[in-house]
Image (cartoon, rainbow, N blue to C red; front, side, top):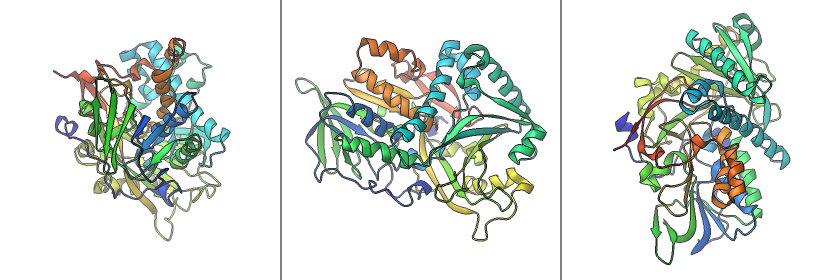
Length: 479
């Protein structure tokens, strides 16, 4: 893993695999607000996914913000957000015991509530602003096949209820035994299952909706304009310079919302934030599955990994389609060579085949026949970002003036990014009272610090938390 973590990220390649969510492209896909780049702006945001879009929205709704420029290397929302599995699912119980051990009960509770509130905030915002993004709220189920996972789930949820309270919204889980699981969720061979609140959404359409609001407020969006280098000019200027192939722009404040690509522009986080390539497929359901679509979203949890899956809701394009991903541990060396790569132009053959076949395998006799035109509608890959401690890195880069980072969302961007953007804007522009309020709901474990940059990544794929893809990590201070 050391060798994989040490690989320097590249710019996002210009010809990625074609994502289901980006077909057809949104009208903002190649948007450039102005034909030429400005020479200077007050704030530059690099990245147009859910993090960058949400930061822009929060900034532009504050008084006194004069000019915000967003740079996107490819088309709008063409990174991880526009290439995900469509889930808004936290599975907080899966990491809760680790968080209690490493962070303490109070911080573990704060993380669980933050994740739950992040899901609700995304769907509430979509509804409030009439963003057409196939937003669906309902139950999810974790189908568990491994005894140790089943025992750990019961222990974790018991601890969550003890610490947060049985009536807390974040602790509302329901257990189902093997026969109930087979009957209710159409899967055989499981030890049992756990159901709880979650949702699904077209993250691509959601982000486009946020950006449309930000453009009305004055955002300057520049697509197909990769940031090539960043440079600090001290002294009387106190400005950052961002170099692009279309010219250079100076700014007082620079924000990197670049997730797994962050170390390309800020090499200090190389080996701290490590890219991971995920694989996703859109499939037509088998003939025996409900014609109106499945009633819940799913994760399928086994001893050393899992898959996650949504059913496209009624009213959406290709309603009933199954979007399934994960499976990285099914590749040689448990997916080792998916780490450290920023190449989303291709996919691993073994993972591609396993993703193709896994849903039919889980539903077994309940699957039926494949669609006459074939099972797969589209398969694609995307690049996520992971940290040694399993948490995002959010805040001012240590020792840097007005360089801010929000990255490394552990494959769970639709749960973490939206409220993280709000937190980052408070860190940048909030007063003492707002900072104190922020400490009440934003996890300290997520904040950027000098200490966190001393811990290099030593992870391997495992079963920790079915959010999108996950890992087990150990932390080793860097010399």
